[in-house]
Image: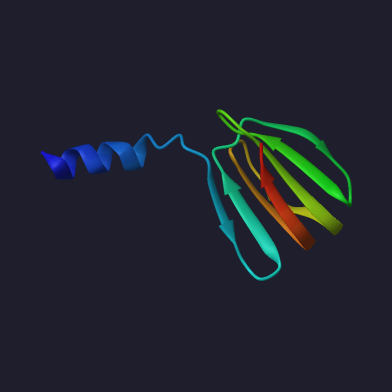
Length: 79
């Protein structure tokens, strides 16, 4: 039964996930882009705001629930 529950959670995953690479940040299951420019990017997840600050921030990939952001990101803050 645990395998079925794990599989169901995987398929219906709705928790926000953040993966940090050297020069990129991947975020999945976000709800909304609140604001962005080349120095600051704010996303809304289910229960938090995700704030990225840095320089030359840009969107590399954008889908309904996934985003890949690149740039010289100095801080990542969850509010």
